[in-house]
Length: 398
Image (cartoon, rainbow, N blue to C red; front, top):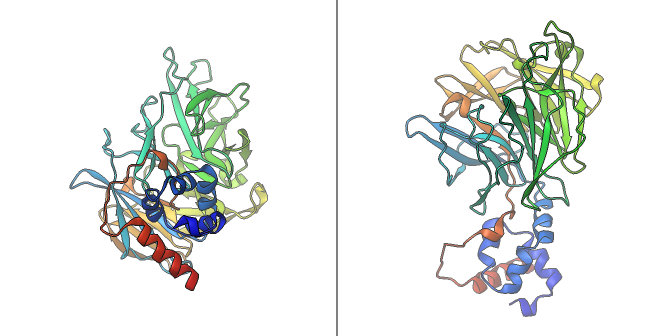
């Protein structure tokens, strides 16, 4: 079939297809597999999926003691509905109940089975669309002489391999009683090389929030909540530490004065729409209400605004994420996942149950990354060539 189609037209057709079809078509001919598994094609396929509105949802079911991952289709401007979803096969079993999800980018999900304590737990990068994963080699920075913590970031930028950045903070008793000291030791794992390498000359004063860190990945930059000691009385200044995955440079994004003077332990960082966002809970122990802030112009401290307040909800466990519709997804104790409408201030029970703290939501776009290790296991009666012939005819008629 490919003998009758110019290569450039063939590539144009293939770029419009979903991952599941492309995986099947790698069995048609070596030339087809060579095209589909090439880095150029994979990158082009990723960049062409910008209009996709899909959410990845993770929950831990306390009845079967398993993690469940699902994909939900969303429509911009419409209320979120949980009626149509596809379940993903999750090939791992956590030793701690459920994995910490470091981040999700271009169809890849970075997982860590650390229970928020163990610094040496395996790191996994998983592509559910191609049903393949890799376990990263052991990091090279693991101080044995002193207590330490590690924080991770995950993401990628166009034209560069996806990376994991690992920050290791050590404890020193002479540091005025503050837990862990800066600067951290830093190493980077690249999917392109398959190896860890240590960064030299790191000049970072900020300390990532211990144990309960999470990232917000926006425009190729990882963001973590962080703080800096000001004096010996344990007074701190809150801020956001950033790391550009392409340039491999650390930076700082300032919080508004109203937030910078408070403890970041009551904050959580998000991407809200196309902006950096902060959720500030009223307390660390009881999270019955919270304020939602966004940075309207990236990097401009004065552009932070308080978007709205989520009023008193007695069973609020945490804010899980935000939808393009403007709704917030909340985890409520003894209920599960609900959608909160900030305009009506009403919640809608989505009928999705799970351990409240296990809920995770992020935008998801399928990709062919990690495809080369994939083994096609499905067989169908109709030949691949016949399916492609029908597909090509259908496209040329449209």
